[in-house]
Length: 561
Image 1: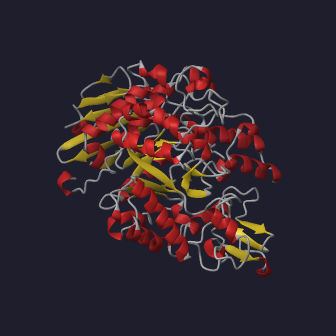
Image 2: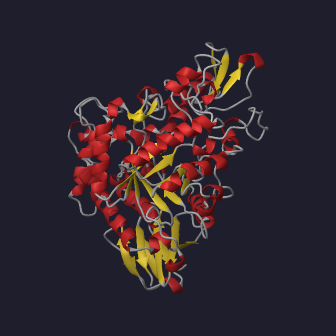
């Protein structure tokens, strides 16, 4: 691969750092993180060496789904502050060379949005067809599966107009009717509002679901339960709407876009991100997140199957050899802490495993998306009591499982590994009361391990996960081979070793990752021998001309030539 032939873009070379504002830093003692808290931590954020900050929803919301149920797209959530706070935050980010990406949540709104209040008021209201309605006189609506509904039913009966409204998510999240051009015009105007303020892009929440099938036909038997996700993502006008969005809004700004793409696969993703189609820049998929995880996040023996993980990630990389651009991530607000899900959070291995996973994210091709707190190795909290959970997904699935007479012990054990609230516990800043997050009562319990695992403790440790992450972001900036270089998987069937090369022009880099609790002896082929180590997540290295001994969770980045 030749650098001269590559279309360089700032968003391809960026490291994206995700902030879940509710859990980042509280500034006023109400137990909820806020925009002022982020402002107070801007120097820390800058020190990480990241380039783009993705903020989860900050808009006005009743918070049934923690901000993903929006009641006003152009106002700030009361708990988070004011528009003046946002303007100051945006300015502070830009002054530090950081770009800001907001969450675009336009598959649905809150049922407290004025549009929906009007829509449900009468059948002849001008806003009626801003949403999807099924008249009760037509009988029960066709089956649709819901992520969050306690009955897993995506239709909710509304007595006021004797009709059902569609909600792929919670009952308080009615789906917008994108088939109505007035809805699209409203959304595009809102996007212009934020771009004119100066934001640098949108992460687009479940954007693959916006096009519904005309007449709501019954889906075939292959789409049962959560398998309907694939049907939802195959709406007939999805790409028509995204091309219109690009034409009316996106093309007018130097910004980045990334789709949260449930239902995307290696076979259809290029429709979203092929530059020639003029839709979006990037997409992130869920194929690796599904390894070893079944319905309602019940885990199985494949939970940490490295061979399957390597195959999934290599297959996705191969799609983008000539066109489009990939994303790479482990954790975010919807998935467990990366060191608990993909590594090993036991005391002996937590630090090296955390560093290893960071190494992977920042040495793969594609834009890395890195979740707040992972830089210090934050781990799952593993609640024992369902009453400790705040996330409606876990809570509603628990009640549905109980109603069905299912195995609640298995459910709780699985959610200790996979529940979304594991990632939402507040950031651990220091060993003071409430980890320095708040002077009040935190909205979600803080992981009790904060006294050992916190930012302040790691700042003064040269070999801490935090300082190692800073070394990684600098390494990626200094080596375009890690951004654009061709990827080649080595030892695909090895159950504990993940090795690959990155090649650009005449430079060849080798990455070796030991995903095990014991030493591995790696015999290097002749063409990969004799390199110099650029980064090592441990203090020691056992290396000969022909082989390398990798300690448990050791990660190496080697310049071969």
